[in-house]
Length: 242
Image (cartoon, rainbow, N blue to C red; front, top):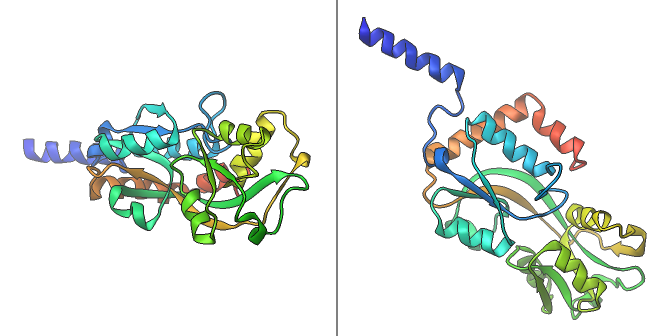
């Protein structure tokens, strides 16, 4: 009788929290990220990807703390600290073995940004100075296209300071982040022009190597439930990410 009661109680707990019932390393995880408007905001209203990650964690029964640090440091923490997840991280072959890839979040589109009248065809831009976020995947994408002169910045704001201050001829980054950053500083987009997308990648929520298959399955179930009830699409649409 006691054994039967124990089984029924365990089943009730699982039904009440079906996604997060088997949390492993994720149960004690922390999140690391950077200020990447409009996808991630360090203050004020949350960005689109923040909302998605928050909902994923909620459905998984998790309440992780979030640290905002420069992007390169975020990657360092996620590869050296236990139970640490990072987002939005571009999945690249050279990164494959450095992280556990939990769930995909967003399809990124990368463009060049220059002061209006100074953006040339791509082939003519390859010898120009390109400002980009230090430690981000953009350098890999540009190198594959034949670009060689990079001006690395510690933040998106610094990317634009380099561009406006004449230390770079163009900036390179995710098109929505670029647009949001300009708008956030009261700079008119009419004064700038962007190229057609040069590359596209998928941004992920990724974890340190101690995350196991149970943790990955936990987040995947949470994502599937968001897709199934339409909440994922609603968040993306509200933030104009689709």
